[in-house]
Length: 202
Image (cartoon, rainbow, N blue to C red; front, side, top):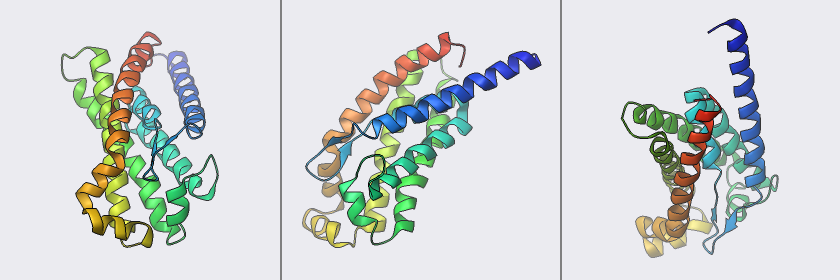
């Protein structure tokens, strides 16, 4: 690849990163509240797209941006998170781990999934759909696991967990959320992969 072509590719990828961050900010304000205090969110879709287009660096950058926006929502910035606002008072550091580092890991694993899918003969749409599904799955897994581990003994969660048990609490908290997020993430990311390929970003 010539220097000119390399420069164009870098500019295109930087532009894509900027666009994905902008999408994250917009999506931060369109979360769908649920009765258990959690919300349906589609912010893992830009993370999956970045992981497809730029591998680990893209997944880490957009995953980190997703986590940072989620963390700031605990303070009423970029929207609000009722549960986050209540729990961040106990430990902002633990909340940072739960909200930010978990999303960075989602970006890393999404990149790994896409890399593994590229070794198969699956169509591009399927590769993207699996990556989007995985990103949503990992997001739910890490978010809820760290929520219970780091804040399970707080008054906001302790009674609910004790009454239902950890597994039932997690299932009832994210059951509908998780299904919707995974299905939408799979469909949108699959289509985005096809579009990125046409734009020569894959």
